[in-house]
Amino acid sequence: MLRRIIACLVFLAWLPQLAILWHAPLEMTTEKLRQDFTETAEATRKLPDTAESRANREMFERAADDPEPLLRWVWVGWAQAIALTAFGIAAGFTAWRDFRLWRWFTIATSVTYYLLYSWTASLNLLFLESWFPDDILARLGVFAKSPLFFHSNFVVPLLLLTVLVLLFFEVSRGRRTRATSNPTIERDAPQAGRPSL
Image (cartoon, rainbow, N blue to C red; front, side, top):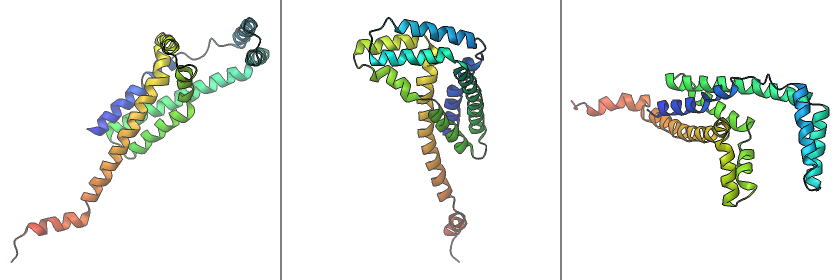
């Protein structure tokens, strides 16, 4: 029963990722990126002239001059996400069918998600920039307008964290089951119930 619950949680985490990855970043061309970063760099000129705004403007200007590395990074990240999602769905299938080593497969895909996708950056954006309730509610409103982003950055990590916790109990239960099904105990159990001659 616990194994099936884990499998369902894994499917809930990974299957919606297909909707996010369905459209490849075909619309992101070099010219479009150059134009976007140029406009962003110009917009930063309207901000107060601080060290942070100057650093951001210089970063956007460098990206506008040479957007090729960013474009390559976007495509590599998309391919990486496709592969990880495929492995995640496969992990759910192996858990549902109780394949051998399904626990380790599920643990590996869950931990890899945490390593490759910076959930801490999302938490920093939501909470650490400002602790004022109005600011937090405003950011939640932004996330509410992008449910797929909210799912990837908050729902999926919570689901996979729940999966890891349940896997801990599943592994512990499996060890207890193996300990109680020791061949020596099983061999001696019938003998203990036999009447002495």
